[in-house]
Amino acid sequence: MELDDAVEAFAPDAFAVLEDLVRADSTVGWEAAAEEVLAAALETLGFTIERLPIPESIVDDPLAGVPQQPYAGRYDLVARRAGAVAGAPSLLINGHIDVVPAEDAGGWTSPPFEPTVRDGWLHGRGAGDMKCGFAMGLLALRALDAATPGWQRGDLTVVAVIEEECTGNGALAAGRAGVLADAAVLLEPTELELLLAGIAIVWVEIAIEGRAGHAEAASASVNPILAAAGVLEGLRRLEQRMNEEHRAGGGDPAFSSLDAPYGVNVGRFHSGSWSSSVPEAACIGVRVGHPAAWSAEQTLEQVRLAVQEATARDPWLVAHPPTLRLNGYRAERYAQDPEHPLVRAMARAHEAAHGSAPDAVSIGSTTDARYYVNTFGVPALAYGPRVRNIHGVDEAVELASIVEGARTLVRFLPDHFAQGARR
Image 1: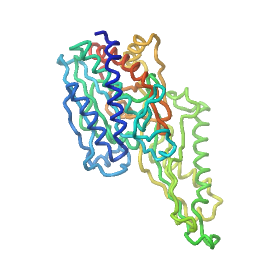
Image 2: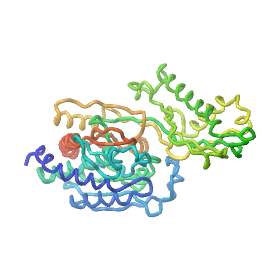
Image 3: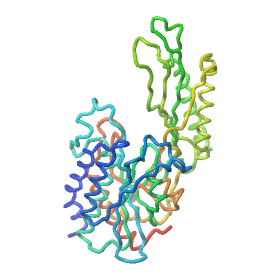
Image 4: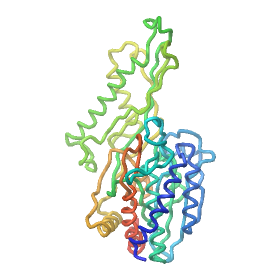
């Protein structure tokens, strides 16, 4: 059986696994059902399965994000398959099993955790980010095993981590436990491009104090929702300043292709419990993409100063300044050398499969590749299918791109084990 014929033949089975993965709601804290779907699929391919607990002590790691909830009973899925040749290069395939909530489910064309195919796209929360990557990887492995027995010379590890979407602590814990290799490929959705770099990011929670009371006597109260206008203006100005400095020539060369890499996103706003009451407090959840030169703590201070400046004329906020804390990501910027043999090997495989070289790109976001590149000295890149509306309503993956990506992987994987991309 020819490689590409094998990829086509096994594609329906890979799509079926993807549907099972999407059905398994794996929002933070509920990852196990989807991990077990993946475990079963990997066991059929001869992988040995380990469920790696996340230690509560990960919170003390200086590179960890701020956990969203306890780790008891939660784990990374680690699957290993030994290579045929001792000393041959090893490879780690990484993906994250967690997905973001589907809070706007009423706007979906079909329920978010009921996979639905329309016009060649499979819809569902996590279909694009990033359960499609696991389907692509499984498809490539099965096709290689069928068409080229004995192809795997070196050790191969597949890891499905938790909390990529909020802390990165799953990948960090796996790396600290020694789940590493000579190179890492992350199956993130990349439009079949080579994703090599991501910005630094923190999550910040901003609490605004008010003075609660009855709506009839609102003039004697202080509404924190209204007071938040100045806070939001400060965040807007901070984003504008960071990107203006980037465009003025002081920016990170790894992101020179991006006009505005540093986004300040207000993702949550909570306040009040009754329409006829003035709330006592408001809480804003913010994601801040920031320059590499700033640490997480320095970025927190920059946010505080921006809010302070924008609210300097508000007597209440001057006397009762908002309180800020880090509450999720503390992600460092990363950039993989585009000339590294790993990158060249994946580009060569893509060109062999599709007739043209892939673009190498950077994003104003992050991936778990930052830990491999920055912390563990493991070359890493991301490569995966075409998707749309990730984190949004009617998230979807183009099924044909899963097949196209698998065609690249079936060329890359044997080449890596034969040639290597050592640290």
